[in-house]
View 1 (spheres, rainbow, N blue to C red):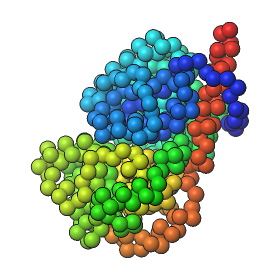
View 2 (cartoon, rainbow, N blue to C red):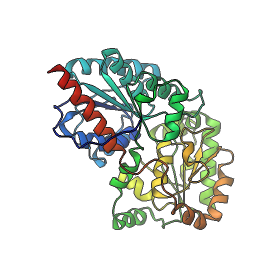
View 3 (cartoon, rainbow, N blue to C red):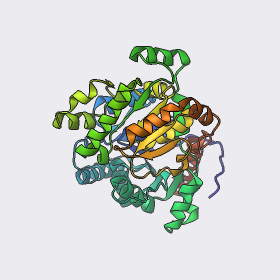
View 4 (spheres, rainbow, N blue to C red):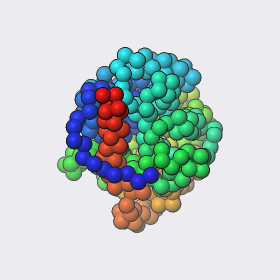
Length: 382
């Protein structure tokens, strides 16, 4: 479906659009929309990422001034997160009476909010619709598929995402190709060169001479074999003379403690999770990123950095073969060494490529559509 982008002629009523998130990537990608909607946005945080390093710091650094309703589903099993989240979000919808609910991505928070909106008969928009890894072992794959099929407006980042949705029988008129808000999120959050230098000096690393790594997904962290293989690979890279900066996800740190393997962090620059602008400063100058994160696969395309993705599959194939490559924990050390051996040429080549995830106007397009829909709903009621 082709979008037009009219300039809104009036502000939407206060709290007419409920925006729900629960994790770091959702905060990053929905923050520009929250800022653009202003007082019309009623913000709900489910608490899926509930420690300060994974949530509060990101809220501050992404410019989200206020969370109107804070839930506390973090730490619960998946089914309980979805069930309790849906119940509490439904209660919020009943009390606030929004005309529209926005969710993003494929988390338990996304699914919970989508269920609540659908049950209440409130129009639902799904940002980043149509991603498919075609790997049903992933809880995220179940979430994203089910949310897409109950959403009214599917904001697809790419044409490939649109085709995925059409293949599943979703009508074209419900699909809007907008680009991905991650592009403007990264561009909007990038710190100055001076601040970048301060970050590198603080950690004792040099531009293009270190590896930045993250690890948090169930398939890697909850598997002792995969977790230990990945950490040993990080140690191999560090011992070869390439410092490895590793902001340690709470889930990863807890599992290492359970395995009595915390010593594997000793040779790394192991840090608490970074505020978003600090993470981007370090990502922008890393020779290579290693991650199992979906968002980092996107962010790296804006920063023109290569990523080794420690996963069997990806829902973001647009970046494969250029910015990203799939690897296993067991092959990670060798793949990293190969990439680092010719990293100067790799960085030069990537610097000339545009991000496949859009032109930095996704939020503008999404906000324009939501504004039009919500304004029409109020007009119909008048």
